[in-house]
Amino acid sequence: MLRLLNIEFHKLKHNRASRVLTIIYFALLTSVALIAAIKFDIGPVKFHLAEQGIFNFPYIWHFSTFMASIFKFFLLLVIVSMMANEYSNRTLKQNLIDGLSKKEFILSKFYTVVVFAAISTLFVFVVSMILGLIYSDYNEVAIIFSDMEYLFAFFIKLVGFFSFGLFFGILVKRSAFAVGALLVWFFMESIFKGFLFWKFRDIDSTSDKVNQIMQFLPLESMSNLIKEPFTRLNAVQSVAKQIGEDLSKDFSVHWYQITIVLFWTFLFIYTSFRLLKKRDL
Image (cartoon, rainbow, N blue to C red):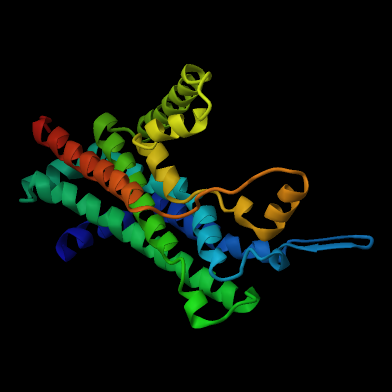
């Protein structure tokens, strides 16, 4: 495993575009901390976002992982370009000539995906912990380390998403086309979701019926791991109750959602291996 990782990180180290994108990605993850500086002072109205409870434990684990997952696209570009460069620079063929099997080649990419996801998760943990210790109203150990399942869900979400990108990178061989294919897939899922809403428009629980079907699609299943955290805020809930709206929903991370994403991850990696095995290099 270490040998395969050394090979991949050696390639990344000498790829300027990958280095720049990686730096941008982790800089954006750090930028979550800048939210604490958002203040509005308009006459007697003073609004400080950090004082609204977004950095309170354990809510911060939900908030930070959701916000951090928005930036995953930048690291996806690194994963996709990493695969595309294997074809354009002919390093894939050279690796195979040097004795690396196709299975080891795919595993080296997957290990890189896992390492990137693990480092991202650790990074979000450290940033969130620092922000929480500074701004949270609750600092009891039991509260601080509750809801940690959001970090695990974030890790699984990244592994699944990057594996999807890796699959498209191997399928189409060009980074721009691979990203385009991923966007096309996203639009296809969105169109299908709209079709389901139209199909079940006469059913009382239309949204529930649509979600029951959509949860099995790859991008939707990854999205379901960490739902939006904003309507979970007490301030938002209070305003909603005053105007007669019910914003209550299930924000939990469920085992079956993790299982669905793990299934897709396995399928992406296995299909990538089968594609590479059948392809004449």
